Image (cartoon, rainbow, N blue to C red; front, side):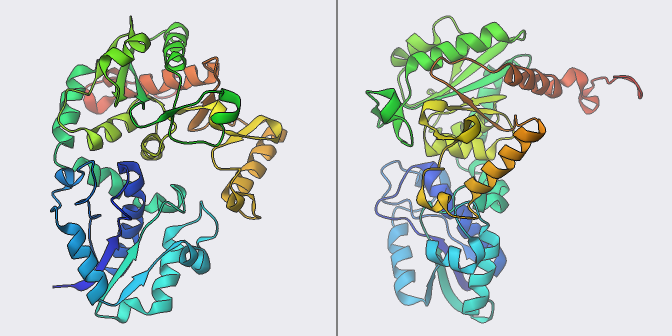
Length: 366
Protein backbone atom coordinates (compact mmCIF):
# COMPACT_ATOMS: atom_id res chain seq x y z
CA UNK A 1 0.00 0.00 0.00
CA UNK A 2 1.31 3.44 -0.93
CA UNK A 3 2.23 5.75 1.91
CA UNK A 4 2.56 8.71 -0.43
CA UNK A 5 -0.56 10.85 -0.35
CA UNK A 6 -1.74 14.11 -1.89
CA UNK A 7 -4.54 15.98 -0.17
CA UNK A 8 -6.66 18.98 -1.19
CA UNK A 9 -7.11 20.45 2.28
CA UNK A 10 -10.51 21.89 3.13
CA UNK A 11 -10.28 25.18 5.00
CA UNK A 12 -12.79 25.70 7.79
CA UNK A 13 -16.06 24.00 6.97
CA UNK A 14 -15.49 24.13 3.24
CA UNK A 15 -16.76 26.21 0.35
CA UNK A 16 -18.92 25.89 -2.74
CA UNK A 17 -18.27 23.20 -5.32
CA UNK A 18 -16.59 25.50 -7.84
CA UNK A 19 -14.16 26.65 -5.15
CA UNK A 20 -13.40 23.16 -3.84
CA UNK A 21 -12.62 21.85 -7.32
CA UNK A 22 -9.65 24.19 -7.84
CA UNK A 23 -7.39 22.78 -5.07
CA UNK A 24 -8.68 19.29 -5.87
CA UNK A 25 -7.52 19.71 -9.48
CA UNK A 26 -4.18 21.08 -8.29
CA UNK A 27 -3.79 18.08 -5.99
CA UNK A 28 -4.52 15.76 -8.92
CA UNK A 29 -1.62 17.28 -10.86
CA UNK A 30 0.69 16.71 -7.88
CA UNK A 31 -0.50 13.13 -7.36
CA UNK A 32 0.02 12.34 -11.03
CA UNK A 33 3.55 13.73 -11.02
CA UNK A 34 4.39 11.78 -7.87
CA UNK A 35 2.46 8.59 -8.66
CA UNK A 36 0.90 9.10 -5.23
CA UNK A 37 -2.56 8.38 -3.85
CA UNK A 38 -4.99 11.28 -4.37
CA UNK A 39 -7.54 11.96 -1.63
CA UNK A 40 -10.79 13.81 -2.28
CA UNK A 41 -11.49 16.91 -0.18
CA UNK A 42 -12.82 16.28 3.32
CA UNK A 43 -16.46 17.18 2.83
CA UNK A 44 -17.62 15.88 6.21
CA UNK A 45 -18.19 19.33 7.71
CA UNK A 46 -19.49 21.02 4.55
CA UNK A 47 -23.10 22.12 4.99
CA UNK A 48 -23.74 21.51 1.28
CA UNK A 49 -23.20 17.77 1.83
CA UNK A 50 -20.91 17.20 -1.13
CA UNK A 51 -19.82 13.93 0.46
CA UNK A 52 -22.99 12.26 -0.79
CA UNK A 53 -21.89 12.99 -4.36
CA UNK A 54 -18.42 11.53 -3.98
CA UNK A 55 -19.07 8.80 -1.37
CA UNK A 56 -16.77 10.35 1.22
CA UNK A 57 -17.42 9.52 4.89
CA UNK A 58 -18.68 12.04 7.41
CA UNK A 59 -15.52 11.57 9.47
CA UNK A 60 -13.10 12.24 6.59
CA UNK A 61 -11.93 15.50 8.16
CA UNK A 62 -10.66 13.56 11.19
CA UNK A 63 -8.64 11.25 8.93
CA UNK A 64 -7.14 14.19 7.07
CA UNK A 65 -6.20 15.89 10.32
CA UNK A 66 -4.60 12.71 11.66
CA UNK A 67 -2.57 12.23 8.48
CA UNK A 68 -1.21 15.77 8.64
CA UNK A 69 -0.15 15.18 12.24
CA UNK A 70 1.45 11.76 11.83
CA UNK A 71 3.12 11.86 8.40
CA UNK A 72 5.81 14.23 7.13
CA UNK A 73 3.77 17.03 5.54
CA UNK A 74 4.69 19.30 2.64
CA UNK A 75 2.55 22.35 1.98
CA UNK A 76 2.25 23.54 -1.62
CA UNK A 77 0.85 27.02 -1.14
CA UNK A 78 0.72 30.19 -3.20
CA UNK A 79 4.24 31.26 -2.23
CA UNK A 80 5.61 27.87 -3.29
CA UNK A 81 3.71 28.13 -6.57
CA UNK A 82 5.39 31.44 -7.33
CA UNK A 83 8.82 30.44 -6.00
CA UNK A 84 9.04 27.29 -8.12
CA UNK A 85 8.07 28.72 -11.49
CA UNK A 86 4.32 29.28 -11.41
CA UNK A 87 4.68 33.03 -11.71
CA UNK A 88 1.56 35.14 -11.17
CA UNK A 89 -2.01 33.85 -11.28
CA UNK A 90 -2.49 32.36 -14.73
CA UNK A 91 0.78 30.42 -14.57
CA UNK A 92 1.22 26.66 -14.73
CA UNK A 93 0.79 24.28 -11.79
CA UNK A 94 2.72 21.52 -13.54
CA UNK A 95 5.91 23.57 -13.81
CA UNK A 96 5.70 24.84 -10.23
CA UNK A 97 4.93 21.41 -8.78
CA UNK A 98 7.82 19.82 -10.65
CA UNK A 99 10.16 22.35 -9.06
CA UNK A 100 8.61 21.87 -5.62
CA UNK A 101 8.86 18.08 -5.86
CA UNK A 102 12.48 18.21 -6.95
CA UNK A 103 13.40 20.72 -4.23
CA UNK A 104 12.01 18.48 -1.48
CA UNK A 105 13.17 15.21 -3.07
CA UNK A 106 9.65 13.80 -2.84
CA UNK A 107 10.08 11.21 -5.58
CA UNK A 108 12.67 9.49 -3.39
CA UNK A 109 10.74 9.63 -0.12
CA UNK A 110 8.62 6.68 0.95
CA UNK A 111 5.98 8.21 3.23
CA UNK A 112 4.53 11.71 3.32
CA UNK A 113 1.48 13.82 2.59
CA UNK A 114 1.60 16.76 0.18
CA UNK A 115 -1.32 19.10 0.76
CA UNK A 116 -2.63 22.22 -0.92
CA UNK A 117 -5.57 24.60 -0.51
CA UNK A 118 -6.85 27.95 -1.70
CA UNK A 119 -8.19 29.53 -4.89
CA UNK A 120 -4.95 31.21 -5.91
CA UNK A 121 -3.59 30.50 -9.37
CA UNK A 122 -6.91 30.76 -11.14
CA UNK A 123 -8.31 28.40 -13.73
CA UNK A 124 -5.43 28.68 -16.19
CA UNK A 125 -2.94 27.09 -13.82
CA UNK A 126 -5.00 23.87 -13.59
CA UNK A 127 -5.53 23.48 -17.35
CA UNK A 128 -3.76 20.11 -17.23
CA UNK A 129 -6.47 18.84 -14.84
CA UNK A 130 -9.48 19.95 -16.90
CA UNK A 131 -10.36 16.42 -18.04
CA UNK A 132 -9.89 15.14 -14.49
CA UNK A 133 -12.44 17.65 -13.21
CA UNK A 134 -14.99 16.68 -15.87
CA UNK A 135 -14.45 12.96 -15.23
CA UNK A 136 -14.70 13.38 -11.46
CA UNK A 137 -17.97 15.26 -11.76
CA UNK A 138 -19.42 12.72 -14.18
CA UNK A 139 -18.50 9.79 -11.92
CA UNK A 140 -20.23 11.40 -8.96
CA UNK A 141 -23.26 9.65 -7.55
CA UNK A 142 -26.14 11.45 -9.30
CA UNK A 143 -24.56 13.05 -12.35
CA UNK A 144 -24.97 10.44 -15.09
CA UNK A 145 -28.64 9.81 -14.32
CA UNK A 146 -29.44 13.51 -14.06
CA UNK A 147 -27.69 14.31 -17.34
CA UNK A 148 -29.60 11.59 -19.15
CA UNK A 149 -32.91 12.90 -17.82
CA UNK A 150 -32.01 16.44 -18.83
CA UNK A 151 -31.04 15.25 -22.29
CA UNK A 152 -34.55 13.82 -22.69
CA UNK A 153 -36.00 17.27 -21.99
CA UNK A 154 -33.85 19.11 -24.52
CA UNK A 155 -34.76 19.21 -28.18
CA UNK A 156 -31.77 18.15 -30.30
CA UNK A 157 -32.92 20.57 -33.02
CA UNK A 158 -32.74 23.66 -30.79
CA UNK A 159 -29.89 25.95 -29.80
CA UNK A 160 -29.38 25.24 -26.10
CA UNK A 161 -28.92 28.33 -23.91
CA UNK A 162 -27.92 27.74 -20.29
CA UNK A 163 -28.98 30.38 -17.76
CA UNK A 164 -27.17 30.28 -14.42
CA UNK A 165 -29.27 32.47 -12.15
CA UNK A 166 -27.86 32.66 -8.63
CA UNK A 167 -30.19 34.09 -5.98
CA UNK A 168 -30.28 32.44 -2.54
CA UNK A 169 -27.14 33.37 -0.60
CA UNK A 170 -26.01 36.17 -2.92
CA UNK A 171 -26.44 39.84 -2.16
CA UNK A 172 -28.06 42.41 -4.43
CA UNK A 173 -26.30 45.48 -5.78
CA UNK A 174 -28.03 48.80 -5.20
CA UNK A 175 -26.02 50.97 -7.61
CA UNK A 176 -24.79 49.13 -10.66
CA UNK A 177 -21.96 51.49 -11.53
CA UNK A 178 -20.13 51.24 -8.23
CA UNK A 179 -21.23 47.93 -6.73
CA UNK A 180 -20.85 45.34 -9.49
CA UNK A 181 -17.41 46.16 -10.83
CA UNK A 182 -14.83 43.78 -9.42
CA UNK A 183 -17.36 42.13 -7.10
CA UNK A 184 -18.43 38.50 -6.83
CA UNK A 185 -21.39 36.95 -5.04
CA UNK A 186 -23.94 39.53 -6.16
CA UNK A 187 -27.13 38.47 -7.90
CA UNK A 188 -27.55 39.85 -11.39
CA UNK A 189 -30.74 41.70 -12.36
CA UNK A 190 -33.48 39.29 -13.38
CA UNK A 191 -34.57 41.76 -16.04
CA UNK A 192 -31.12 41.47 -17.63
CA UNK A 193 -31.57 37.72 -18.04
CA UNK A 194 -35.05 38.29 -19.40
CA UNK A 195 -34.03 40.90 -21.97
CA UNK A 196 -31.00 38.86 -23.00
CA UNK A 197 -33.19 35.81 -23.63
CA UNK A 198 -35.64 37.88 -25.69
CA UNK A 199 -32.82 39.46 -27.71
CA UNK A 200 -31.31 36.07 -28.47
CA UNK A 201 -34.70 34.78 -29.52
CA UNK A 202 -35.30 37.72 -31.88
CA UNK A 203 -31.81 37.69 -33.44
CA UNK A 204 -31.32 33.96 -34.03
CA UNK A 205 -33.24 32.37 -36.89
CA UNK A 206 -33.02 28.96 -35.21
CA UNK A 207 -35.21 27.35 -32.54
CA UNK A 208 -33.98 28.17 -29.04
CA UNK A 209 -34.41 26.28 -25.80
CA UNK A 210 -33.35 27.63 -22.43
CA UNK A 211 -32.09 25.42 -19.60
CA UNK A 212 -32.32 27.01 -16.16
CA UNK A 213 -29.76 26.29 -13.45
CA UNK A 214 -30.72 28.17 -10.32
CA UNK A 215 -31.18 28.06 -6.58
CA UNK A 216 -34.28 30.23 -7.01
CA UNK A 217 -37.83 28.90 -7.04
CA UNK A 218 -39.89 28.72 -10.21
CA UNK A 219 -42.07 31.48 -8.78
CA UNK A 220 -39.04 33.74 -8.37
CA UNK A 221 -37.88 32.95 -11.90
CA UNK A 222 -41.29 33.30 -13.56
CA UNK A 223 -40.70 36.95 -14.57
CA UNK A 224 -37.59 35.85 -16.46
CA UNK A 225 -38.95 32.83 -18.25
CA UNK A 226 -42.55 33.68 -19.07
CA UNK A 227 -43.28 32.83 -22.69
CA UNK A 228 -39.90 31.18 -23.26
CA UNK A 229 -39.23 27.52 -24.01
CA UNK A 230 -37.39 26.57 -20.82
CA UNK A 231 -36.52 23.41 -18.96
CA UNK A 232 -35.50 23.17 -15.32
CA UNK A 233 -33.24 20.87 -13.32
CA UNK A 234 -34.63 21.67 -9.86
CA UNK A 235 -36.69 18.47 -9.69
CA UNK A 236 -33.74 16.14 -10.34
CA UNK A 237 -31.71 14.39 -7.68
CA UNK A 238 -29.10 16.59 -5.95
CA UNK A 239 -27.69 18.35 -8.98
CA UNK A 240 -24.54 20.17 -7.89
CA UNK A 241 -22.30 18.09 -10.17
CA UNK A 242 -24.74 17.43 -13.01
CA UNK A 243 -25.78 21.10 -13.21
CA UNK A 244 -22.14 22.12 -13.55
CA UNK A 245 -21.54 19.63 -16.36
CA UNK A 246 -24.83 20.41 -18.10
CA UNK A 247 -24.17 24.14 -17.99
CA UNK A 248 -20.72 23.53 -19.49
CA UNK A 249 -22.29 21.53 -22.34
CA UNK A 250 -24.80 24.19 -23.41
CA UNK A 251 -24.33 25.87 -26.78
CA UNK A 252 -24.18 29.18 -24.91
CA UNK A 253 -23.59 29.78 -21.19
CA UNK A 254 -25.10 32.87 -19.57
CA UNK A 255 -23.01 33.14 -16.44
CA UNK A 256 -23.73 34.50 -13.01
CA UNK A 257 -20.90 36.26 -11.23
CA UNK A 258 -19.84 33.15 -9.31
CA UNK A 259 -17.11 30.54 -9.11
CA UNK A 260 -19.70 27.94 -10.20
CA UNK A 261 -20.30 29.73 -13.51
CA UNK A 262 -16.60 30.41 -13.91
CA UNK A 263 -15.83 26.71 -13.46
CA UNK A 264 -18.52 25.79 -16.02
CA UNK A 265 -16.96 28.23 -18.50
CA UNK A 266 -13.53 26.71 -17.82
CA UNK A 267 -14.88 23.22 -18.53
CA UNK A 268 -16.79 24.31 -21.64
CA UNK A 269 -15.82 24.65 -25.29
CA UNK A 270 -18.90 26.80 -25.96
CA UNK A 271 -19.10 30.59 -25.95
CA UNK A 272 -20.17 32.17 -22.69
CA UNK A 273 -21.57 35.55 -21.68
CA UNK A 274 -20.26 37.55 -18.72
CA UNK A 275 -22.08 40.55 -17.20
CA UNK A 276 -20.06 43.55 -18.40
CA UNK A 277 -20.75 45.92 -15.45
CA UNK A 278 -18.77 43.50 -13.26
CA UNK A 279 -15.64 43.74 -15.42
CA UNK A 280 -12.57 45.96 -15.14
CA UNK A 281 -11.97 48.64 -17.81
CA UNK A 282 -8.77 48.88 -19.86
CA UNK A 283 -7.61 51.02 -22.76
CA UNK A 284 -9.00 50.18 -26.17
CA UNK A 285 -12.39 49.09 -24.82
CA UNK A 286 -10.92 45.93 -23.32
CA UNK A 287 -12.37 44.25 -20.22
CA UNK A 288 -11.13 41.74 -17.64
CA UNK A 289 -12.38 40.02 -14.49
CA UNK A 290 -9.22 40.19 -12.36
CA UNK A 291 -7.18 42.94 -14.03
CA UNK A 292 -7.53 45.22 -10.98
CA UNK A 293 -5.76 42.81 -8.64
CA UNK A 294 -2.21 43.81 -7.64
CA UNK A 295 -0.69 40.54 -8.83
CA UNK A 296 -2.23 41.03 -12.28
CA UNK A 297 -0.70 44.49 -12.56
CA UNK A 298 2.84 43.15 -12.22
CA UNK A 299 5.07 42.70 -15.25
CA UNK A 300 4.58 39.30 -16.86
CA UNK A 301 1.11 38.74 -15.43
CA UNK A 302 -1.47 36.85 -17.45
CA UNK A 303 -3.71 39.91 -17.72
CA UNK A 304 -0.94 42.25 -18.93
CA UNK A 305 0.18 39.64 -21.45
CA UNK A 306 -3.41 39.30 -22.66
CA UNK A 307 -3.80 43.06 -22.97
CA UNK A 308 -0.62 43.28 -25.04
CA UNK A 309 -1.83 40.49 -27.33
CA UNK A 310 -5.25 42.15 -27.66
CA UNK A 311 -3.81 45.56 -28.50
CA UNK A 312 -1.64 43.97 -31.19
CA UNK A 313 -4.67 42.15 -32.61
CA UNK A 314 -6.60 45.43 -32.68
CA UNK A 315 -3.81 47.16 -34.57
CA UNK A 316 -3.64 44.35 -37.12
CA UNK A 317 -7.41 44.17 -37.49
CA UNK A 318 -7.54 40.53 -36.38
CA UNK A 319 -10.67 38.86 -35.07
CA UNK A 320 -10.77 38.91 -31.26
CA UNK A 321 -14.03 37.03 -30.81
CA UNK A 322 -13.05 34.00 -28.75
CA UNK A 323 -14.59 31.94 -25.98
CA UNK A 324 -15.84 34.81 -23.80
CA UNK A 325 -18.28 37.61 -24.59
CA UNK A 326 -19.26 40.55 -22.42
CA UNK A 327 -22.82 41.87 -22.56
CA UNK A 328 -23.85 45.18 -21.03
CA UNK A 329 -26.81 46.14 -18.93
CA UNK A 330 -28.87 46.70 -22.08
CA UNK A 331 -28.48 42.97 -22.87
CA UNK A 332 -27.61 43.74 -26.49
CA UNK A 333 -26.31 40.60 -28.19
CA UNK A 334 -23.30 41.03 -30.54
CA UNK A 335 -24.01 39.94 -34.10
CA UNK A 336 -20.78 37.90 -34.18
CA UNK A 337 -22.02 35.88 -31.22
CA UNK A 338 -25.21 34.99 -33.09
CA UNK A 339 -23.07 33.83 -36.02
CA UNK A 340 -20.97 31.70 -33.66
CA UNK A 341 -24.07 30.09 -32.17
CA UNK A 342 -25.44 29.29 -35.61
CA UNK A 343 -22.15 27.63 -36.52
CA UNK A 344 -22.15 25.60 -33.32
CA UNK A 345 -25.76 24.52 -33.83
CA UNK A 346 -24.96 23.42 -37.38
CA UNK A 347 -21.86 21.50 -36.27
CA UNK A 348 -23.84 19.67 -33.57
CA UNK A 349 -26.62 18.44 -35.86
CA UNK A 350 -26.67 14.73 -36.60
CA UNK A 351 -27.90 15.47 -40.14
CA UNK A 352 -24.42 16.79 -41.01
CA UNK A 353 -22.40 14.15 -39.14
CA UNK A 354 -21.39 11.08 -41.16
CA UNK A 355 -20.90 8.77 -38.18
CA UNK A 356 -24.43 9.55 -37.00
CA UNK A 357 -26.01 8.69 -40.36
CA UNK A 358 -25.65 12.24 -41.61
CA UNK A 359 -24.37 13.58 -44.92
CA UNK A 360 -21.65 15.98 -46.08
CA UNK A 361 -21.01 17.94 -49.23
CA UNK A 362 -18.73 16.25 -51.75
CA UNK A 363 -15.06 17.24 -51.72
CA UNK A 364 -14.33 20.51 -53.45
CA UNK A 365 -17.72 22.05 -52.72
CA UNK A 366 -18.47 24.53 -49.97
